[in-house]
Length: 450
Image (cartoon, rainbow, N blue to C red; front, side, top):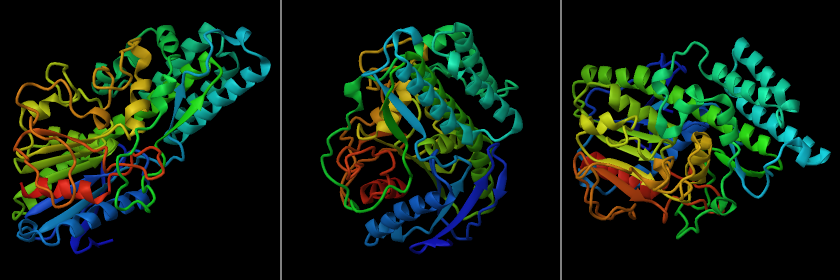
């Protein structure tokens, strides 16, 4: 694929350490470079489908726009090893899971609980392909029969997960209180396992009622499934599933941050210098791809970053907050983006709205609103940017608008765009991947020409 409806397209491919495997080509004369990153469960084909749909809609939405016509655009699609899963994470609801151990459940339920734990391990396994990693996965499987009521096995389960994720302690800088990853590595293993038994309230698993179907309602979700829901009859199965969810989350967070910092950041600096005609660079990211491009913005040095569009981003809603010491608060503090920062958010997104805060329950915190704006562990793709300083958030109308509508975008401001009306799964399910719709493309285009 060399273009998307007339816009030059090339790919920048990275390995999990951020090493560039395929160099993109950007034509001379390009004035606006758009760098876009897919999320955590896209293979190459689905990433390309997402980019093609999103920017195909971008072209259609702006075909009569003189401001876009004055610019010469090029797109660089980031490809990184995020893996492809049929069901990446499973959310445990509270309708099952009695508080007791194996003695309090029957043999049939105990067998079902063990099967659920093994299935959760199998979902995580494709992320870990090295020989030592596979040994640790096998050690987890060996613990399953005794995990229900043996504290030593429960502690070992947590300790093995730590070895699986960071055997040489290379990623301490990725640990943070905003998602309890600091607790996962540094907390008491037994307390971690016990706290992980907490489930999402059953009422929280209901999707938001769609206000409208996207205009492309017949399309299938090009991102695959991001989350499922499961009732489990065992507290240990709850704990294991939540901990394995967090393992998946941390591994993808680690990769996304590394690819952004070590790969995409240096690449945009190089392109900004090598292609003299580039006046502005626009970063766009979906799901964990939002972390890729935010890490790139944070680590890059070019003054040409003009806009940042985060589409159903899978990181903390306090990620940009100074008062909460958010992981990316320096992006706001250092004014790394000269133009607007757009954040789509909706309760229709269950992957960010539920699975993310559920995996963070290991801290022992049980905020009143599960995944809501007052939950310390809410996702930015569910609630928008929270706990920001005065003047950082645009205080006017903040909603995703229909194509052709006028936005009041302000330079350097965060725009929390409530997207319930347009980021919708037409089947009533998880809308995490429905970010390719024309209304999202239109909003990105307004940031480009702002």
